[in-house]
Amino acid sequence: MNFINTIRFKFNLWYLSILSLLLIFLGCGIYFALSETLHQSLDDSLKARGKQLAEFHGIISIIASGTFEEEAGELVSIYFYENGELHHISHKGHEFPVRKKMIDQALAGNNAFSTVHYQKNEGLRIYATHYTIADPAIKLGRRPAIKNDGQLKKRGQNSSKGTQDTWKVGVDSAALVIARPIKSIGTALDQLLYILLAAIPLTIAISGIGGVFLSRKAFNPVEEITRTALDIGEHDLSRRIPVETNDELGHLSEVLNGMIGRIERAFQRQKEFTADASHELRAPLAVIRAEATLTLEKERDSAEYRKSLEMIALESDKMSVVINQLLTLARADAGKDSLKFESIHMAEFITSVCDDIEVLCREKGLILELCSLDNVLVHGDRESLRRLLVNLLGNAIKYTNSGGVIYVGLEQIEDSAVISVRDTGIGIPPEDLPYVFERFYRVDKARSRHVGGSGLGLSICKQIAAAHNGEIEVESCLGIGSNFYVRIPVGE
Image 1 (spheres, one colour):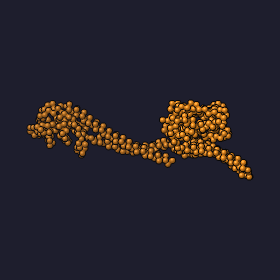
Image 2 (cartoon, helix red, strand yellow):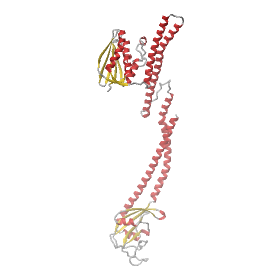
Image 3 (tube, one colour):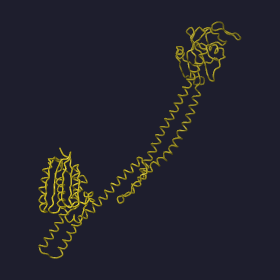
Image 4 (cartoon, helix red, strand yellow):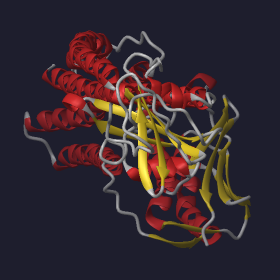
């Protein structure tokens, strides 16, 4: 369970880290998007205001007379050149810093924006646009206009209270400059920043609690899998993990259940194998012990001793066969069965094996007949293939009555060499056919043990065929005979 807790902690940490980064990026995105929107809105309003004022051809006279009505917080000025000097007219005489480059850009017909600091370091957004003067001779008001140093160049006498002076602007174009404070934008952005600084930690905290809850809920199936896996032991493999979902965890549970099922079957086969091996070895050991005990009870003549020793030797041979077969299967299961593959002409190879087996057929009164043998080349281990053929022929001899026939054939079907061993023996019942290749399986246990079978021969044949990337099959009809087919890929 510590493993699950560690995974849950790492998941929560990862979740909170990613969530924090996402919220920070989202907050920054909202902040900068709103800032851009507010500044763009201010610029648009300045452009609209500039267009509106530019349509008033007498705006200079209105500004100079002091009757111009500005909007709240708005500053408006007119800049123009006369005789090479820059002059400007401002409402109520205010003056704010405007770069000469910006005025020149507006006089050239290009709109320009700028942000400057004004009184008390207050930020101003300035917009400059071109303005066409319809009448170069304009009656200005009483207030003197301002030039470079703050005073507009005067033409005529000095102005005095109660009189109206006439000023002439000998130009036909000027720059209309409008400024508005950006304090409201800064205030709105500050408020948003305070909200984000308060909301992001709160959201992370709430989401963290929700993440812990969701992680617990998400890892509950994993904990159930862990508990079930811990409860499953070597002596109880019958339990299975409950599958309640159709997601990845449900699929994982199904895979683990399948694995546990395979392990259970493997353990069961191992137990059966051990029990069957013990049973196979117990019978000859019992005979040897009984025979030796009886022989040693009293003095006997040489013939009786010889008979007892022959019995002991026979049972020892049976034990030796079983032990060798067990070792063969054990090495194959462990992957330590070293095979020496070589190119084998199967027709010659089968003929050689049948020549050695024919003597056993004659002893039992059987006929061994070789059918058509195709010239097929196989890449395999000569010793193990010989063991396979000897086991199949040995079974055919054991379960075929005197006067019967055993047929051996070889043909190439597509890319496989197919070896067939057919007999006219007692056959195998249909219900036993699926199990004949299992270890220690006997169709008739009493009869098999009587004729010397251990129930391992066909298992070894199956293992040899698999080691050659082949397979073995059986067809049988009770009372008519059996036919075994071994398919092995053709070699080069």
